Image (cartoon, rainbow, N blue to C red; front, side, top):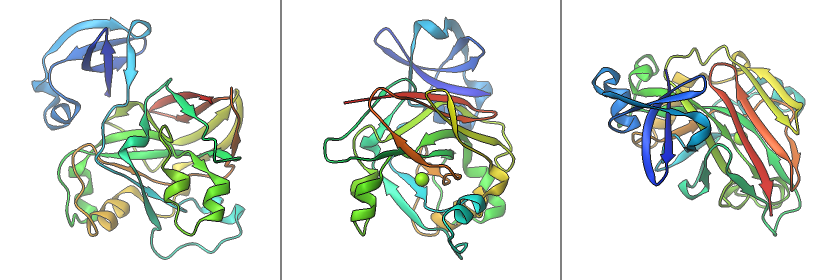
Length: 256
Ligand code: MG
């Protein structure tokens, strides 16, 4: 099931995405994680007639720094013993088709396609074998990065945190094997990143255990699991498409 949030004229609504239409449901996405059968199915909307919103409004987005074997090889780096994590602020979140704003203070803004875990309920000190109980589904994050500022600063906060630097969406896929998904990024319709999530160093259950032993994860929080090889720059006017096989395509345009 693909869950979406959308704007119907001025009303924010939740629905189930099927091909080119959305079936509106009652309640929030978090309630749908809990008990999808309880959410009453209502009217149907044509996908082209509504605006897709970010599927969740996370209190925080926890990102993993280096998590693909093929990306580590590309960078000539040793595989990490434990995940390197950082946080993107909730104010960076935008949705499918929203513009990424190129900041004046950067000369190199890169794309990073990532598959992301959406937390369904409060999670603290969760064991990896129980992780599934706390995962509502999976979505796509483009971990937009001002690479020149990342290289200049010791901490990555500035490089990762500009407004609009966290596109999320277009939907949350609730049934998916996160350990075997084709993951692709296209810039102006040319493939720039292509791998499979089976090349991940730390699996999604391992990440839920590792991170929930540091901090409490709230419903709607996002764990973005790292990017495969091929990261590179975007320019104003470019169209960037982050794709995960069974989730869909997250499309954004770069603007100034
Ligand atoms: Mg990243």
